[in-house]
Length: 110
Length: 113
Image: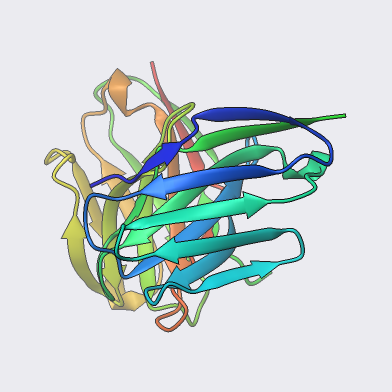
């Protein structure tokens, strides 16, 4: 039931854009996105509830296609601070357990 | 500080010993999760509480793992007869009922020798 993320790793130069995908084999109620820096706990980025909405703040946004059971995270004009491992998290319904995806390592270089 | 706190932050033990980790969630949060994370992997679900009720437990867990959340406040995760494969970071997260956002603690790193 673990969602699958792609790509597994990506290296960007500052200012470049990236897309990280999250795919589930089961119907989803919500999708979360988290970023984890080395040696630290995951930090919440955003949550999307079923309804196909797109959310975002500043240069990081995400979409949720409930029919395809997929979500994508969009990072535009990347900054060095964006480096880390990105995880999607999926919930099958309210009150259900919460699964994290396989992770995508993102490295932004000057 | 009103964040999620975990104790101890680091634990080194010998194989076969029992260990217990404690998590103090954000006070108004109803949900509490335990995850295990090894290097390069995503957090792996262990168990989940809604207030004091343990609603789900991963089938990946053997009977050596047990968790409690008495009175719906702090939670403990106990690992009995530790094995080297138990070496990992154990993460606790809490969540308010409405938004679902998970707030993580700093984790408890277990090393089994």
